[in-house]
Amino acid sequence: MRFWNSFFFTLAIILSLDSPMQAQHLTAPAHVGIVQVPIGEEVYPYLRHLSVRGLINGFSEAQLPITEYDVVTLLHSVDTTKLSTTELALRRKFLQTYERAPYDAVTMFPAKEAEPLFFDGIPTDKDKYLYRWKVDSTLSDLQVHGIASFEVREKTIPGTSHAGLGVIGGRFTGTLSGHVGYFLEATDGALFGDPFIGLSDPVIGKNKIFALFQGYKFFDFTTGELAYNSDWFTAKLAKEAIAYGGSFQGDNVIVSPTVQTPDILSLQAHVGAVRYQYVLASLLGDPRYSLVPDSISNPTLWAFSTVDPKYLSMHDLTFLLGNDLEIGFTDMVIFSRRFDLAYLNPVDFYKSVNNSLNDRDKSHLATHLRWRITDGLEIRGQGLVDDFRADLIGKGYWSNKWAWEIGAMWANPFGIPNVDIAFEHTRVEPFTYTSANPQNSSSTSGEIIGSSIGPNAMSFWQQVRWTATEKLTLELDVTLIERGENYYDSTGNLKQFYDSKGNLLYDGNQGADFQYSPISQDFNRSFHILDGNRVNDLIIDMIVSYEVWRGLNLFIRLYNKSVDYLAGIPVNPKDTPYRFFGVGAKALF
Image 1 (cartoon, rainbow, N blue to C red):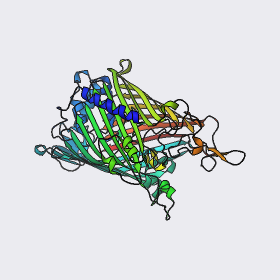
Image 2 (tube, helix red, strand yellow):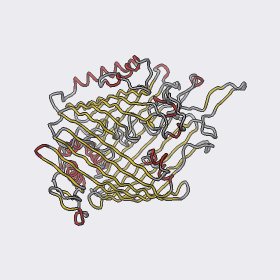
Image 3 (cartoon, one colour):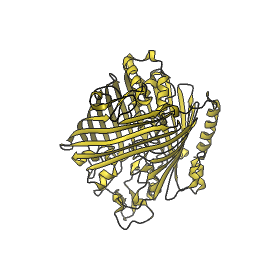
Image 4 (cartoon, rainbow, N blue to C red):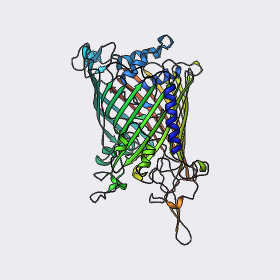
């Protein structure tokens, strides 16, 4: 790993010296729109589509989220003569949403240049707010939204049942004096019906209130941000989803946005073609591995248990070389059971720092790349090195741990407008994301912060997205996940294998669970990708969304997950099939 530290450091210096846009170019004067656009908002696939088509330059998903100001800047850079009717309509829509231009809208409470919401304002294509306010002379503004959604899901596998999922909440966001941005979103939800439907949801099932405290009835979420920007520099304190790597499907091998939202301190610099971020994130460790015994509760239930402090510290340096090639490097470390001042340094190599601290922590090196080969076709890739021995590559050595992902996107294939086709392949070697100290595994709240497929697995993901009009979108995702699971007994614990004298030879660990690092008996074994209890998951997910009026979306969804254990279903399967049909509505007002 020491060689790679020097290699990445040297390459980063060379690229920074050779970058075509250098330090004289600052990001921007004082402006509004400093705060994040939450990951998952519909503007992201639109910007991706324009970027792959070659209509905008500089849009990157290697570091997310981006800001409202970034969105507006990119939209204004488009040559509108090359846009389709649908693309033009979406551009107008997103400029109205993020630039507030033209400054007319519909509000529930009286506001400047706004029509009343009730009742003539509802069936319009103007942005809806509870309230908004701005002062042009000081570059200050405020937007207040209400949030509501309701969905009915009918489950047909396993068994037949149904549930309703209702959410209500609010969001306020804005800027003060062109330098300070603020954002807060809070929602409360309730489930009516089968708890299995909520527990199987990738978002609701992770909510501890729902899963542990409220009997599978209620859940809540919140995100917030306080940011300061001046020219090229931005600092923020936030509780928000973050992503590093640039995956088309949003499932990065470096840091994915699908885990429980972390609390972060972020320092960012954006100078010309160079973007740099330092992030310190507070993670949630596992009480089962805490040093302080918990005598008053069952630590496996998490509630009220003692949990060691756990943190992620990382740097990401990304260069745009010309308009079509982007390359970045990520240096990260996970540490627990104490806070260490050494990892507050925003310019250091963490692997060497970790070595100087007696190698107590878990460090990773990663890289990511985006290349627009030609207008309409783009490839992306990323790789993460957990640990490796170069002389034992290809020999099944347990400590050769890495993950990589490669994908491509074709915009307007065969000249068909407003269509995107994307493909991505991910591969995660056995024992990747594990640590000898399980508290330092690459996880938070029991979830991997990298690729969701986990170690000893690979996936093939395909997506077709058709934006038929500015209001109607169809999205079809097909994912094949191949895994080699660990061998478990009927109690859910790893199987134990003994010799004729009763001595433990090895256990059933095949490197498929980030919580289990190898034991000493495993050090001489060979581990290859997909060794273990083979299982294939085929997931088909189709969503059709229609915006009736601005801020009101109706949608239908069909989700089917089939599970195939190639050697027969085990006594205690870790994976089960699941199918549901959903219909619902979302409102932002």
